[in-house]
Length: 103
Image (tube, rainbow, N blue to C red; front, side, top):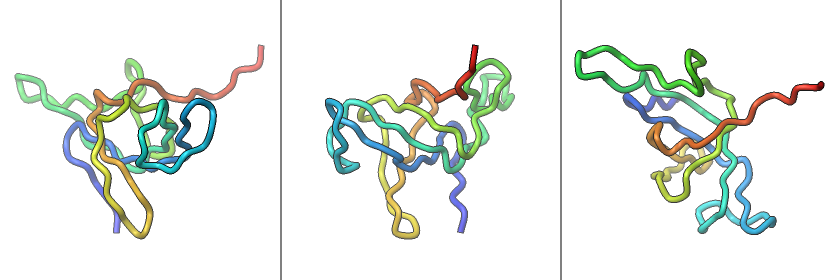
């Protein structure tokens, strides 16, 4: 079974939860969460009814497998296939991990 979030919501699963530099159990209060995108909603609607896709930057769509950072406390949790997941609004995503560029 595949999970498809509605509109401007994104389904994530925890890769790593950190608090003051140490690993903690997901679900506890954390300083920073590093998560992977499982699935992405279609995006919100503008006032004139156009669909606004969820993007990581102008014109670059958010996609499954992207690694993102989450604003603290803005999510709902659920279990799917014995794995803990989070569902968050697009506005709760505060950053994305970019590939390392060698200068």
